[in-house]
Length: 597
Image (cartoon, rainbow, N blue to C red; front, side, top):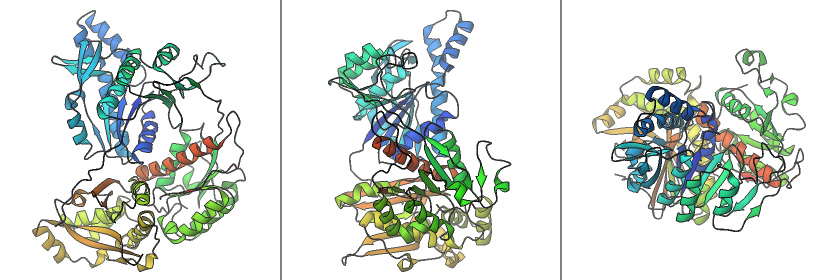
């Protein structure tokens, strides 16, 4: 029996703070989720410290003064900290929707201790082991900022206290910095909204930061950061750069001018529609061309009025297109458009595992030749960043084998069969809920998992097997008797793909149905959840998340788009706009298939 032993590798932590200047309304939680996912997909464990929504703390103070009319500060502290509790729960919901494993913790669940004035306290302690234990099951811990607890209950940390929470978490967890996300892209010599001649800093020491930030960063937070030697970064959402506050020499920043990139989205099914909503929320970064669909009239009535649809590829792929997003699915039209996009000098972001499994060498070659990005993060695992983890480990020869539950449709159906449902009923229900296509044979027969497994082989071992050589076992061959026998033995069936390098320089890859004990990490995966075990010389690394669905898949694709946008911005000369077709160094990365035309 396989026992799961977590890897002993040291965790990398990020502490990200999101204040009310970026959390202005409920829609902003999705934008903040992008920023958090950007870090988790690189293997970091994230503490996301959140403030109340814009104006909510002021409203609570005003309500408390109205009702209490000068009553105790301690009771007022109980009231005004409610904005942060609400915000943390909303942040957790947004991350769950995106498929990110998350735990929302209140201060008393972490023994987050504060002391001092009930409305202007300082943080003095944290149960680090409690926090680390929650990271065994979650990639992100969302913590409300602004308050902690003493022996008599909650007390707050003063205006801007969420900055202090982030600094202290970075200190206690040994993170390399506390990154404070604001509505400006760093610390300026003056308020840039009032003074157009204000200049940004790349680096400041603590005292200089205190003088010029004018409250942008809480004074107490800067003082504690200096005393504890915590590096503080001040940045805005999605930016690759920040103002770094540390014991260092002051450094002014060069001027930056960035233009939006024009994006052609091919397909407007569930994932394509979700991705378009993300793009519309970032008009300063992306401009949408008309979306390519088979029948524009079918999509227009219920769509956002800012979206336009066309059935003409030439109209969708206009000459000034920077990035093509392929969300069509299949290996016909989508395959040819993917190749032509790169040949025509456009970056390519795709979610088409079948095309990548067939044409990865060709597409990667075209990207390299033209200095372009090829990104396919949602092809394997949806919002579960398995390929990013393999890209980090493989160059160190740190991967012995990879196995995973990587098809949400099969996982959903196997769950239903385990409950005693009939096979036909389970398939029909999966189709009704959108997990399965009208023809589910690609999923049931293991073809979908085989495509994904071939891509995993490439990222783990540098070998791209012919998908036809990957053996596979079909769910259709799983008899009720086998299922009943497994259930009686306390086992649960899962469709598992596994690949391991052999001694001849090749790879053994197969998709099989395995009856697993309840103690196996895959046994707990439900519905569209995906999970992967990376076998390494020092143990096992387990990665899980949502492997299908509109929002997890759209999250992964949007993360790819943001990677391209940041690389494009870095390639621009400071103070100059980029040209329409300026190229960046090629990257090939990960990608679902979606019938959208």
